[in-house]
Length: 259
Image (cartoon, rainbow, N blue to C red; front, side):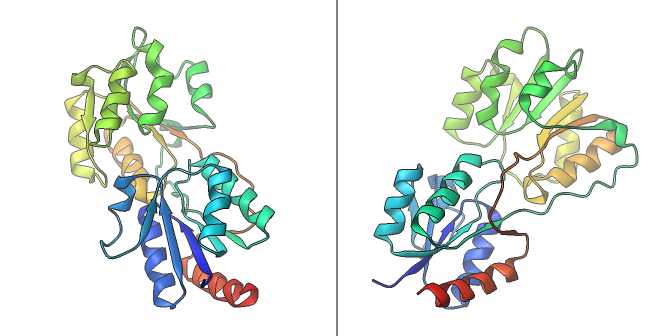
């Protein structure tokens, strides 16, 4: 069986990476966690769907005869990256992480932006007291706020998926405090939503431009609204880059070296 490059996808950037690798005529295997992520790719593109633990990743590499791993998973998908690194190490194949560039803030009043290393730090502090808070942090973090609705006024924005809305409801968010929208969300709509809900504080992740972080920073400054950014988890990657051209070069060199 022909050996392949495994692209761990599911992000917008991973689609561009897939196109770049395919243009180089290198055999490619793409895997994503959900059907929603699968929809990012062209219908004629072969994509495996399903969440994998370390054992499943090892089996996938063996079954698909993987020679190189390119990890373009979401910046906060820590377990995915850790398992992929461990799998590459055990099997003895090259691994490269694509990391989204961080947003360089242009906000003049830096006191309006607070960066925290975790949601635990957010809830341990007094950051939310007396605020009307919009959480744009993904549905998986919402259960952390379930016991806090009687102390703070919390709103949540989630993806327009049944699973996401169900998680938000189970986390104590009532229907009038949930909005389901698929990004990207432009500055005009972002501004209108914050004003509609009279938001005084926004919590987001450092998910880069693809996650609309730059727009949130700009709108927060314009409206004089506080912004709390949960920074990316610390993962030690064997190799990483934010340049897609470097990924193609890495794939070419690694593929022909190890095949």
